[in-house]
Amino acid sequence: MKKLPQHIAIIMDGNGRWAKQRSLPRTAGHQQGIEACKRAVRSAGELGVNYLTLFGFSTENWNRPAAEVNELMRLLRMYLRSETAELHRGNVKMKMIGERSPFSKDLLQLIENAENITKDNDGLNLTIALNYGGRDEIIRASSDMALSMQEQGIEPNYDNVQEHFESHLMTKDVPDPDILIRTSGEKRISNFLLWQCAYSEFVYTDTLWPDFEKEDMEQAIEEFQGRERRYGAVKALK
Image (cartoon, rainbow, N blue to C red; front, side):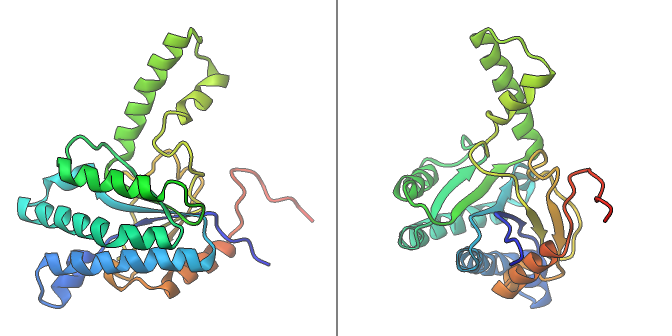
């Protein structure tokens, strides 16, 4: 039996192009993107994936037009209000990574409510990255690590820095992604999980995110299963 990936991370790209192709406003693409998120969560659970991470909103996305940002926040509220109970019924454990301080009080309450309700579930681990940036995470983790080691009187050296550093990442309780999927045909990592994706297999699909189906996830898994992961080593000669 071919090995199933433990963790799939997805850069959900193409909402705007999906809407443009249909002469619809970008907000319509984002609305359909929410439906694709629901399908991805169901698909990951059905396929037996243990961890799914979705890149929902980056630190750079605040630079988009205010009306679009407001719509994205509205859709996030709608998703959390309508789907938290469904996630709980599906035994999904949800958590958010990213800097929370810019979000409104009511949105933070919805996020924390979803995390608290689902915290004891032991099915799919769903991580949603909101106001997240890989460089920002590394800087924050480095700062926190330095302060923590200083307070504990630990002298940093080559052998202990990585262990302490990783314990300060937002993903400290999550294994590194086996697969990073990016939709819409773009081939960039876009400041997403920069440390964690050091040895991830990248799978690019031309499918726009609102059209992403279970079959697309299955194809990505099949591509992953056809690759040989050597982590920098050389394949042994037979």
